[in-house]
Image: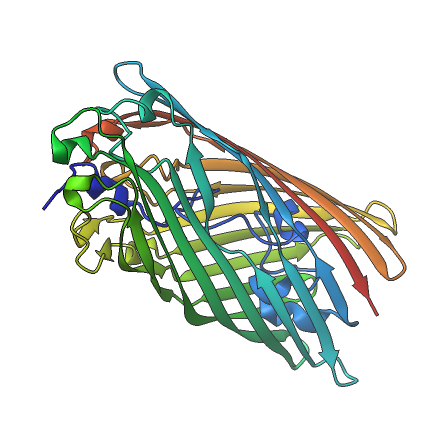
Length: 419
C-alpha cells in the first residue's frame, strides 16, 4: 500500500479554510454589524438581530426585508526560513446574507423573523508555483485549494417581558460542505520520476442543528446589558475522495472511494453594555468567548482507499475571545455614521498551524454609513483588518515553518425596506 508522507498534512487541514481570524468564523453578517463590529449585541437597529441577538427583534415596529451581502478581500504571503515564497490567488470572496422580520400583535411585545447567513468558511487557493512546485516544500505537504462552505437558516422569535427585558430564541439549520485539492506524487510509488502527479480531491457535505438565544435588559433609562449564546453544532460530511492519473501498475484511471469527516463548530457566548449618550449618539462595548477547543482533531474515513488511509489528525485549537467597542451618530434625520474597533485572538496554535489557515491575531477598525428615506434604507460598511505577522518555528510539520503575512479588507452593503 502506498503511503505518501504529505498526506498527513493534507488531510489534517481539510475544511478549515478561513477568510478571517477566529479559525473558520466569518466576519459578522450584516452591514450594521460590520460598521459596529465591536458593539453589536445590545444595540441592533435592523432584522440582523436574528443572528446577533434575537431578543432585540421586538424593537422593530414594522415588517422588514434586509439584503446585506459582504465582500471579502484576503491575500496571504509566505516566506520559508530558506527564503522560498508562496502567495494565494483569487482574493475576492462573496458572502450573501438575508434577513426578514415582522412584529406580532398590536402592542409590540412579540416578533419573529428568519435569517440566511454564511457564518463560517470560504476558500483559500495558493499559486501552484514556487513553494507549491517544490517537491520538498508545500507541493505534497498541503493542499493548494481548500474550501469550507456553510449556509445557516435561522428562524427566530422574540418577546418583551415587562418594559425592560427583551428575550429571543432561534433555531440553526447549518449546511456545510468541505473540498480540498492537492498534488499526489505517484513517482514515490512507482520509482519512475517521469510519472505525472495526480490530483487528490475530496469533498463532502452534511447538515447540523443548533440554536441561539439572546436577552437584553434595559436596567436604567438609556442603559442596556445584553447576553447571547450560540450552541455548538457538529456536522458529518459525507462524499467521495478521488485520485487522478493512477499509473497502470496500480490499475490506471481514477481511484475513488467514499469519504467522511466530522467538523465541530464552536459554542459562542457574548455580553455587551450599551449606553445612549444623547438622542443621536450611542456607544457599546462587547466581549465574546468562542469554544474552538471543540476542534481537537480531524478524523477522516476514506473507506479503505489504498492510497489515502484513514487518519486522525491533531488540531488542538484553543478557546479564544474577541473584545471591542463601537458606536453610532445620527448626524441628520436621514444619515447615520457608525464606527468600531475589535480585537480577535486566533485559536490556531503554532504547532498545528497550516498554510490552509493563514490565521493570526488581528485588530479590526470599521466604519459604516447609512441613509434612510421613507421605507427604504441603504447602508455600506468597511473594515480594515490588521493581522499580526505570524512567524512559525515549532510546527508539527517542519515544512510549514516560516513567516506568513496576511492582508484582509472587509466590505458590506445593505438594502432594507420596511412596510
